[in-house]
Image (cartoon, rainbow, N blue to C red; front, side, top):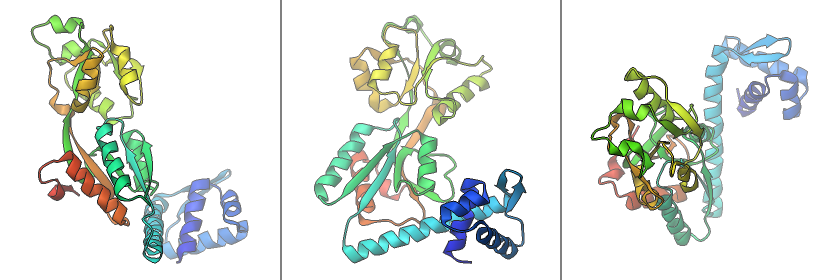
Length: 306
């Protein structure tokens, strides 16, 4: 087995068709078919199920593919490291971040890095959590600043930077503020502005409501990113939403404040997530040092989540 075999396997899995994969690889279909037969003989199990319209990976094929993609990433990282050793270039650092982290402080760190390393180039990608994890696993970004997943996926590791507690936000004139006390039933009865259903924040809130035996939330507005302009939709309305503690000052300036209710299930840790065995360039290492300095969680350098 060689690196070409891995390319063949991945191409067939991506195209779900031997002919289209062969065309993309610049091979004849018969040559690729022979290569797949050789790989299946080596594995001792069928790696793909044949159908009239193409192929699908078997359970064994999916396991093989996970390892194959990891080998591709390790190989690409090795070439990148060797290139940097040869040329002395700092290269490019690709950072993904969640819209729910303290973006202003993150950008302060990026500015410091750029001032320190004039030759450095930074690619930034703001995406929802589950997309960021997929990008990191696929090697499309080098590191991610985001709420830490639990459990941590095996190929990844994280450094805890800060803690956050989500607050239930409402207009300063919201009727709920006239109540002496609030519980989950009171806020669950109101309309909400929330991220899409497949996001961790939305799932955790809905799980909390369900565990309390309450009807599903009424979500009037779905928004992938709740920036300041999006949050203005709450002003003068009964809408509620969730927001990080770091965003309270700018929200107060537009007339939004947290309701006096704590939701312990929505506490979370923010961290710097990287691939466990990925290439750690000097640029990536320096970015990590600057993040620890900026976020200042005591003992952060030792708080590695594996």
